[in-house]
Length: 571
Image (tube, rainbow, N blue to C red; front, side, top):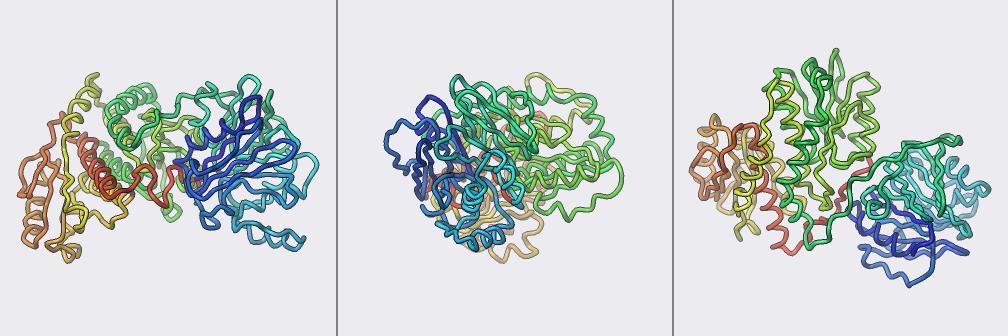
């Protein structure tokens, strides 16, 4: 979940690494640090954001840096990376969790080594220093002793090379003229190089100012670079606001990408499946719930939407199963683990992701790239809308439905109307908030509740409208505000009944409706769409805006909610 960056060359290593860390801060912002190499290693660390780092001007030409999402040890200065070895000869940054850290730490303590932090990552620096000799061989040997994720960068005193290994989390190398770069996300490389070498799991690399070499199991290998299409977004006061505003153009890019990627082989695999799994985490899981409803409706095939972290409990029986994995970053550890289970059972896999060259694009049999553009705010917005569109197009095409070229224009026009929906009222800051819906609208309600929780820290939840009177209505009183989403005419009677029950118990009800009035205190009418199955792409936007407005009114930073990170690379 952490962001790691490295540079070696004839430029200013301090400035380049700090720039990369700021770009990758969405991956973790509990603490940050930089190690400058040369005749000796100087380490600068801080609790808090990258901006809090105080590093003097210097002529260092090699550096590694890290911005952290805490796993082992609280987010303090001593636990921030990089970590130095006991003799000061090696500095390490690490992304992952070492599952056998207690065993390894005990071995080091028995040798008289004292630890300066509470982290598992410090173990790596000490083990590398003890190995000595060929640093690349030492990196591979130490990584081989680690159980769990251990993607790392290491630099050694007096050495102008950076040594690295990918194990469980992403890593990419960029080669320029007289300089080389490495980062856990190509987003940090895009302004410096036009292509990158994406390390596969278990691969090691060594970069110097003039060359990059790659190894697997001690043997040198040759890799082909991948074009970098993503560049850091323009700095702005609120990335989440910018990303919601970008939804129409992001949807157009997804539309074109899916048209270009889907072929008859993929459609045949989907049509012939006897059972389809949708797997994801958080917002991506909600996209999977939408996919389950849509494919069951259009293709009449049994589907199952499962949280990736719970996928190990799913029975993978029968023939002609098919699995669709949804992840914005392409690095979500639980999703990758679930995909690996499917591959071991011989189940064909499709990845829907926003990041080309990410881990899942190598692991899955097929990939649909969203091309939504970089999403920096931790709470997903435009990527969710694009996930829904990709699933919608796949389902419709598998069902034999063609697309009119004006679909992006229709969505663009409708979204402009939706941007005028201001659901925020002062009472929302203090009242108990609930989201309800039915069918696909219940999926939207769940996403709306998640978005609100993520960036306001207020407890809220979503309920299927018909389930209210089976328990949740006990929570309703005159301090309750309920957000209702309704886009299916068949559900109007049921939703109207639920609204009446809520209001009779004192609740204040706000409705987002495509089918007219249902008796709410206030109703926002959604614009007409040519296909009702498109409404979830549209109706979620007022809920995204509601969460954003509430977060700002509460004085929080919606881009960096506490305890969260954008790319969840640990189990």
